[in-house]
Structures are given as C-alpha cells and as structure tokens.
Length: 447
Image 1 (cartoon, rainbow, N blue to C red):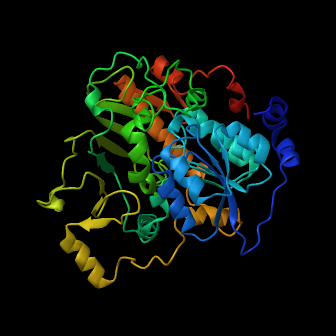
Image 2: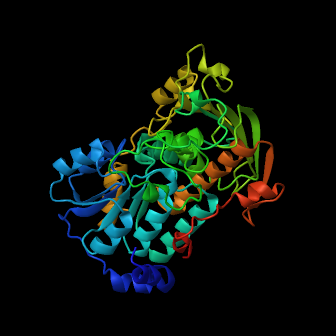
Image 3: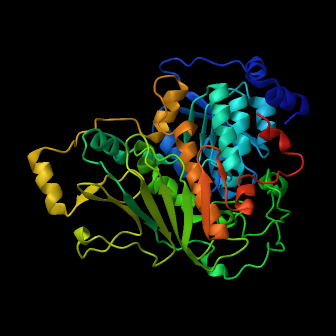
C-alpha cells in the first residue's frame, strides 16, 4: 500500500478511514460490488455460491499468480473486472469502487487482507480459520469492533440446518448437560506422505506469473517457491497453515462452540502425536480440550482425532454401523447425538429413540427458510441481515483451533489462563501465541 495512505489507515484509525473511503448505502435491489482476492483452488466454486444469491457483482480479481488457470477462467467470466496481482495496489487504486471484500487466500494471508479491508470500512468475508496465530485473531476481533463493518468467516455450514437445529434443540432443552464431545476427521492430508521433514524445501522453478514475495506475506520464514508450499500444500506447514484441525475443526465444532458457550479452554493436552515434526503437522493426533463450568453449563471436554484410522470410541448407541470420515459424537445428560460436518443436522442415537421423539412431536424440526452463508454475508453488506459467523463469534472458535495447533506442534499439556489469555506453564508455547513479523509488514499489526 502507498505509505502515506497506509499510515493514515493504521495510525489515524476509523476517522481517517472514513475520510478516505466514504461508505455507500446500497439500494434494496442493488447488487454488492466485491473485490475477490484469492482466485485459485476452491475459489471459483465458492464464488458460484455467492453468485447464486443474485446480488453479487465482481468488480476486481486479485491473485498472486496472475497466469493460473483459475484466473484465466475468471477473467473470461468477469471481463469487466479489473485484474491485480498485489492486493495492496488493489486497495490503493480501487477502494472507492467496491463495497466488500471476499478473502479466499491461504491461512497466512487472512490477517493482513482482513485488517486492511476493515480499516477501509469494507465488509469482509474471510475463509476459515480466521488467521494463523492467536494474536492475529485478537487484532481482527478488535478491528471488527472498532470499524463496525460486517464480517463473516467462511465456515459455510454455520448457516445450514445444524446451526438452526442446534439453537432450537438447546432452547428446547433437548441438548443439555453436555459433558463430553468426540470429534474427528480421518481423511488423508497432503503432507502425510512427506515423512520426516528436516527443513523447508530448497526451491523449484517458479511458475510464470507468480509473485512469491507477495505470497509470503507477513510470515517471517525465509522460503523460496516450491510446490510443497503452493498451490494448496501450505496447509501442512506451521508457518503457513493450521493443519487438519484448523481446516476441519471450524466445520465440525462450530455450533458446539457457539451454543455451548465454550470460549477458550483452560487446558489443552496432546494425548497422541504420531510422527511429530518441527516444520509440519503430525501424521495423526488426538488433542483434548478441557473447559470449566460456565454460565450454568457443566464443565466439559472435547477430544479431537485426526489422521487416517485415528477414530474415537464409537458409542454403543451407534450400533454396528461405520462412521463417516468426519463427524462428532456429543454426550449429553439425556441423549447421545451423532453428527457429521458443515450444515449436516444432528441425530439422536440409537435411532429408535430418535424416531420415538419424532413421532411424539417433542423435537423441533421446522427451522424455517433462511439465507445460506454467502447470501447472509451479502445481505449484511446491504444492512438487511446480521452475519451468523462474524469475527466476534468465529474468532474465539479460531483461537481454540490455534491452541490445538500449538499442542500438535509441541506436545504435552498446556495450561491456559482464560482471563489473562496466556499459556502459563510453557514459555515457548506462550511465545507462539504470536509470531515474528516479516520486515516491511509490521503496520498491519498496529490497530
């Protein structure tokens, strides 16, 4: 970003931001003009979901790899959109020409792009998890509060059936007295075949049109381009991603975290680590999170299982059926619940008991017709709805994911002070709640 503009946004605060970029009131039938940052991978499929709302208008496309096949396809689809490689230039040159930002970049780029978006007064949809470090998420939640813009994390199931069902079943007293949850994701991950990684890759021929300096962003690791980073493989590295837990925990544990008012754990324990590594996430892990009693709800804990074949104990109520590759079992006072991920609704096991409750009409089943996650964000940009996964809700969930990633990285037991928001028994783990910042990118950490 232009230095004077950068200083105005991050030193002058919201007033300077408002002076630089006046807000625009959208009419009832008007589309939301968006800048789309991060075009590759699942990006086109997600944008199609936004398009299904009927109120999306893409005015800018930005990706560090301007020659990738996804960018070429999207330029053909949106010929009127202006193309950028550096998102900082996009904000410098076009911030008065779009209403909102859709941030579909890798985990390590979520933070700076979201911070700049909010400082410009732009609603921002940011993929999950919110950021790579606990400190970055703290700053994102503070910026959301300071600038007062609509925000949404991209855990799209948080606008699905499970969201409205969990809310209704808790209010009806069906989900009550939860003391334990087993959650899991057992699919293979990209880094599983890599073995014992001893350092960062030494490099490969960089694809034409890829700006590696912009791709590295705020993270301090002195890396060179390698296909084990980009595209997609970044998720397995501590320096760039949040592993399987950051990826899938946001889809499996989101309603549990919100409606059981979990906040942050008091203790995180690595119960199992297979092939722990200094650079990449383990081959498999089992991590326990202990939560104290809160707001009249009993103390409870969660065991998270990832890695192929690393399944939780299967409750007797589930019978002899095989569980899916991803899901959860919730142990409550009166019932055991089984669910999968995203918006998939919960069921009570055994199913005979569930059918009896359904027949008696004692469980809410009609949750109404609601906007999906994408339209919910766009309607929030227009002031017509509130987002369901704003940073104030998705931030603490993402911070729980970050704490789990630290346990996967370091092992052992971590004691977390929920009031002081620090790890008290492991100085290294406490220091890793934030990261060093790459020189030249420090301004994004100054709210």
